[in-house]
Picture: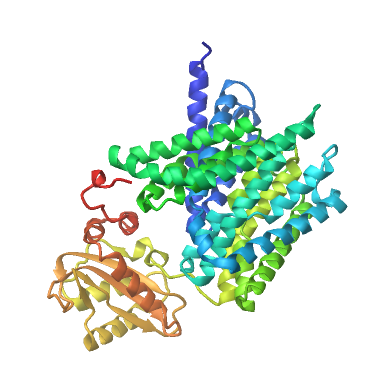
Length: 574
């Protein structure tokens, strides 16, 4: 039996380690900048691929990421597995019951929001194919259908994350957008699956295409009806007789692989089968949120970064970049989606402002567009120039979604403590033993960057403290003040081992002291920050972890930690 040599294994492991490490670091930086992680992950591949690393050290890049041979086959197989599992997670985000409950408004947004950009994309690709990036020898019909689908599909995971960040996910507007995106995803991937089935020359092609379409529709109908019912009935049995989370995790992944194999056998891509399995599993009320998050984390923090980073290894983005084509694709894509979704929302009775918000919310393409483009590239429908344009269009529309929603609705992203902290404003050991001394230390730390006058800030905070004490109980105090001329909120955090009396209602001294300084002109900032402090530290375990922190990194990690499950891992069934 053939096997990898020791050299091949070493190269493979170093390649995977480099891809994962750089992708995760840049993904975290992207999220820190309030952008989707996929932006950083793709940038990692561009840096490690022929665009940057290959241009600087082509021999080293070719040795680490070979384009042929056993290592290339292993990496290719792993990225295929990664994209398959990523579509399982994407399918689990689709909540069919929620889409059904939204009634005709979401259906109108989905139908018109897909029909208009599809018609615009098809007309553009059919009438001016060169301007849309067609390559010589491409089938006009297949290219036009692909281009229309690429412009009409949305990215449900990106849309959902944007709405959550803006506290809009559970609103009426958010539910309409999410429900329309659910329908959009299902129809879009079904259409693309059929387009993939149309590829391939040879005698009897028409009959083969007809069989592929029939089998695809039959598989989709089965998974969304009988398959959903069977999985809903099977999940409680799996939960009752297997350990959490391994039992349900293995069950879901095995079904995804079987579904992927089935659609690959039919003649369309494996990801469509995994996507439909995800839809069927995710729609079951027996699937707990913690199980969903476990599967999401398992895929999103290992397989997804590898896949998106590997995109940059396939194409030289610099050599294939065409500014005119990128701008053309971006304008046509945004115009079609905004017009279609806006008209659908207006038809559904929504106000003009909300209709614009729906359009910008649905305009995000994200990972779905990139995956669709990659499959088209691998199938020979498009070439590198158009693929790069589609990737850039997907990234730009994803980054625009949140800011444009905020602009249209006049909303701001919720303020978080971590947004206003810095290492110099974290004091792990307060030296003062009184409230005034602690306030002096923390105002000095808060104003150390020249953002405010420390003495004036101390006087303002202390004056308020004498009017109303700021101990809130459970060992926490939040001395605060609003300052004139302050550009943005400032938060400083101090720890006291012995505790400091801030006259809390429960009589306990404060071991964790937050100093909050906000601009006079910003009425809501102080309330938002105080509300988050109260919300975070309702969990006693998180409070204890925060009190034990000795660096800002440890403190932020404590804030992001999840509350423990009652009874430990074995207490959870799914």
